[in-house]
Image (cartoon, rainbow, N blue to C red; front, side):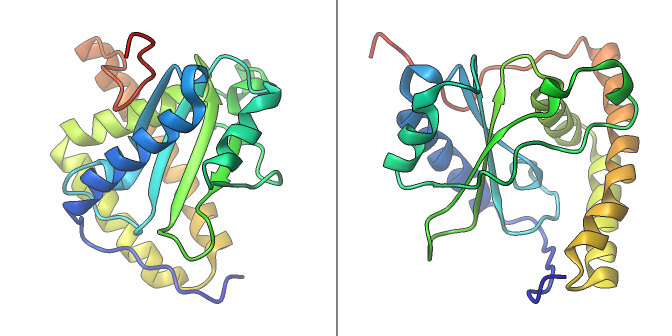
Length: 202
């Protein structure tokens, strides 16, 4: 159980600019390894209540690239080798390989702004889910409101118990993702232009 209370706050418009700045920093750190880099998670959705944590997702071809960790460390990011993957979506987990949920994870340097960096394989289900959920919530006001209200009530209920917070939130996210999949089919959704990516011609 964490000693720090869980705090979900109303959306801060400054998160968008911070997210783009960190996406650019990760893009520069990874160089040509980065296929796309995006600001993801709740702070990337205008109007959505969130914990004050910037989430960045970078997509690469090979998570086993020996230089990937060194490049990120050289840029000042802290590798967390104990965090190697995500809980799979409950609906799709039985039919997908474990590689769909793997990641290489980094945090901010000590004393810096709270930051989570998730490096995932391009085409992995976990990577797609992050972009799908972000774009769905950006487009759907009622889902955005319901998700924000749920998180604020849950944070108040669980307080400092982060394990309970995540355990209760996980099935709710699965429900949101089911709605997002229906939305994606109706709107012929595909991930759009990334927030940041390596341009070899520059």
